[in-house]
Image 1 (cartoon, helix red, strand yellow):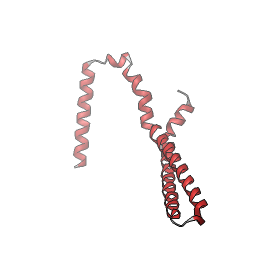
Image 2: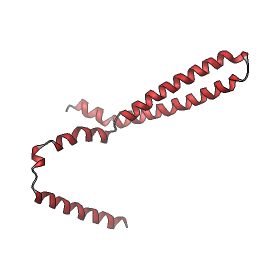
Image 3: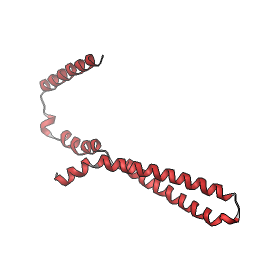
Length: 123
């Protein structure tokens, strides 16, 4: 894995947040343009051109909202990307699969002791 790959994995959270931010503002724009178009629909022929433009802008905002929201949902966060990259390598590693039972018991005991200490400190 190159440093370029690591950089982009670490930037996934910022990309994810940016896409969510853009999606929010596109959604708000679609609502505002839709409300404007709806209010101008009742005013008659004088505002027909503005009504069409607001309606067109509302449709474009809705489509862009769906695109950016889909990207926001499909792009993993940094933790998810690391899990996607690391877990298959760990699971498919033969050395990891041949870990003796005593080491697993020892690690379970250590985890239990650590969890007990953390829960005592939280109370």
